[in-house]
Amino acid sequence: MTGTANGTASGATVRVAAIDCGTNSIRLLVADIDPDTGELTDLDRRMTIVRLGQGVDRTGRLAPEALERTFAACREYAEVIRAHGVTPGRTRFVATSASRDAENRGDFVRGVVDILGVEPEVITGDQEAELSFTGATRELAGAEHPEGPYLVVDIGGGSTEFVVGGEGVRAARSVDVGCVRLTERHLLRDGAITDPPSQAQIAAMRADAEAALDLVEKTVPLAGARTLVGLAGSVTTVAAVALELPEYDPSAIHHSRIGAEKVAEVTARLLAATHDERAAIPVMHPGRVDVIGAGALVLQTIMERTGAREVVVSEHDILDGIAHSRAAR
Image (cartoon, rainbow, N blue to C red; front, side):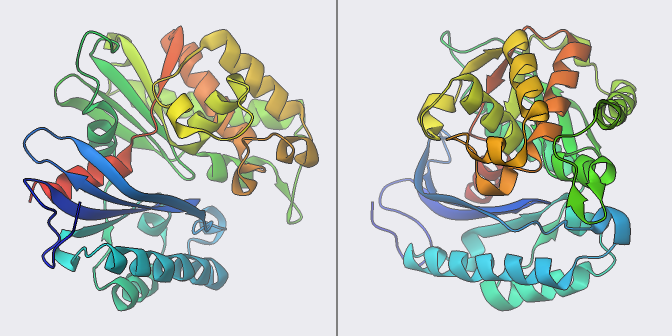
């Protein structure tokens, strides 16, 4: 399809750009969307590990080097957005956990505006959860897909979002448990990651995840969902390892179903491995090598608490929800 100056494509579709900036990574989606049917066609989808949340849990501030890594990715994304003819009015930039927590988030906002011409929306955990739910479940309708209501779990770097719903969101909660936050809180010693972690460190991470689930269950009826849908890099990487893929393949991962026993097996393997052993796994992104054990443990703990026999893995998540929200405007 050919884009036009106002960010629309030929026919009824709308061309949009969505950026999701989290604690560990920043991602871009440029897509054509039919606002009536919700059909989304990727034009460009990419991810960069920037570790924006480096040290935020300890200092409460975004580190200068983390900001510069993020701004470098924004410059790259600005070129892609311009090349596809998307206007600022059809571009939405959403910032999640790390920038929400930081004292100096004003520096982050000003930098993004200068580079992209759009102001990042530092959204609440509830808003983050709703966008994730929309992105993950918009296409889960039909006989070939698992039944709702769904429990959508988005395991990020700094936080994890829990959403229960069917055609819409019924309840949502965001908690400050993520793969980067748990790794820095429990595995970082004198500036280095403990490799592999001790049983005591693993128990401490699990205790944090269990405490977070206690909070979630106060407002979100986890037991009322029929299907667990897992999002984001920790979940998709666990799925890729479980499927023994020779390389990361989103089409093979999307809507795969990974059983609880397999998740536990992969988690144990990742937690017992050294840095080099994890890095040697063909599907492992270099930016996830040090934090994937914590992310996998969060997923395993959720499955054990909810009694889920399997997780339906989605490559579509908050990024797709952001795109849908811009197309609807």
